[in-house]
Amino acid sequence: MTTVNYDLIDSVSTIVMDDGKANVLSPAMQQNLNEAFDRAEQDDSKAVVLAGNHKLFSGGFDLAVFASGDAQAALDMLAGGFELAVRCLTFPKPVIMAATGPAIAMGSFLLLSGDHRIGSPRTRCQANEVAIGMVLPIAAIELMRLRLTRAAFQRGISMAATFAGDAAIAGGWLDEIVEQDQVLPRAREVATEAAATLHLKAHLASKLKAREDALAAVRAGIDGLAAEFGG
Image (tube, rainbow, N blue to C red):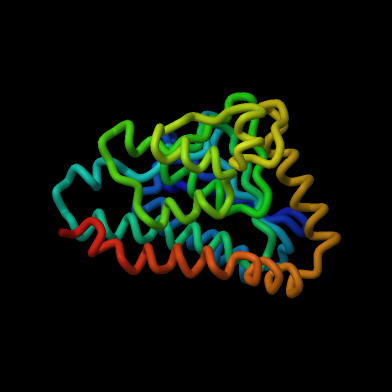
């Protein structure tokens, strides 16, 4: 089943996650997203939009993989999700996130990895790990630290707080909110403007400088996943 749709219109590549359900970041979804980003990196686009389906952005990792008892598969899925976040943070073109609905767990961490993030009144952002008996990976904590205010960072981690509306903007989860049917059009509008006004080499060099420490911390978290959860 195709879980990712891709199109290029003028200078904007649009990548839409749609597995027909919760857009879980399963190994298959991760592979399809990386293939789509490969296309966006190689084609003539100058900006990228990453969107969910009409129900939600992403519900996070595939819990069935965690429940399978295959520890290596679980570690590989964790690493793949955070590698995807790093790819968005370091992508050579602006990445605009279109949070068409809730962004939960790894879905919320992926959302945090965009250059500009647009949601709707339906969008709720939550790191729900401590509510379902899971410990947040270091890589996830570092992504939250990069983008969230200090108060939202602490509440988000320790209380599995849900952020929506103005609270999502104030906390650093989103940059703007529009009506539900305008999320994807607005994301494309922002991407088109970025494509027309930004110098891509300067864009990339500047965001890499700004994110250098955070990227190193996330990378260390990825490298340490086996020690963190494999014992």
